[in-house]
Length: 266
Picture 1: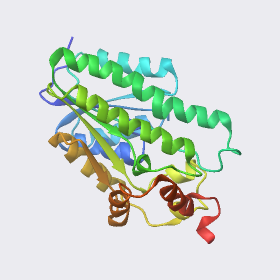
Picture 2: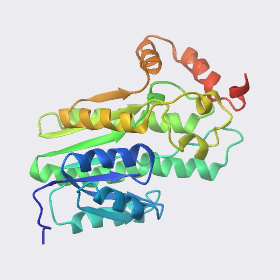
Picture 3: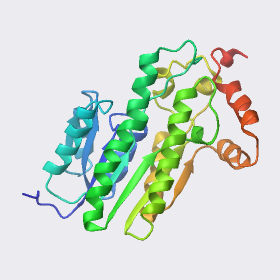
C-alpha cells in the first residue's frame, strides 16, 4: 500500500557524502520525501540528518556495482508504493593514474558503477515513469565528459558515456512529461580525489567548488527541466566553452597538466 504523504518522492544514489548528500538535502529542503542509497553503512547516519530537515527518509545499503545491488535498490523503491517523482542517479567513482599501471579490477568496478549501473537503473526508472508519463531524472556526469582524460582515462570516458546517454534519452522522451538533465560538476571539494589516488595532482590540490553549490545548481536545473548544467568555477566553465572548438589532442594535453601524478609539485 502507498505510504501516506502529500510530499513528492525522490531517490538519490551515492548519497552518503559529497554531491549526492547535498542533492539529498536539496530535495529534503524543498519538501520531497526521500529514499537514499550508498554502499557505505554511513548512509543510515545520513538518513537521520535528512530526517532532521523534515523529510520522510528511507535508507538502503546497496552495492550498485552489482546487478543484485541495483535490483535491491529498485525493489526498495517499488516497496515505497508511491510514484517516483524524481531521481538523481549520482553514484560514481574515479581512478587516477596511468592506465598501463592501474589495477584492472578497480577500473572494471568503475565501469560497473559509472556506466552499467546507470543504464540498469535508468531502464527501470524510465519504464516506470512512462507508465505515468511524468518524472524528472538527473544524471551526474562531469566536465571531464567534454575532453579526453589522461591519467583518468577510464573515468573521463565513463562520464562521456553518461553525458551522451542522458542527452540521447532526453531526445527520445521529448514528447513526454519526463525530463532528463545532466549535471556536469567541475572539480568539487569531496573525497573523490583522495579515493581516486589523486592527492599529488594539481587538480587534487587546487581550489574546488563547494558541493552544496554544485548540488543547488543541479537541483535548480532539474526542476526547470534543463538539458544540462555546468556547475563549476568560472575558469572551468570557460574551459568547457572554449573546448567546443579546441582539437581533442590539445584538450588531452591540457587535462594531463592537472591530472598527471606528481603534477602538484610542478
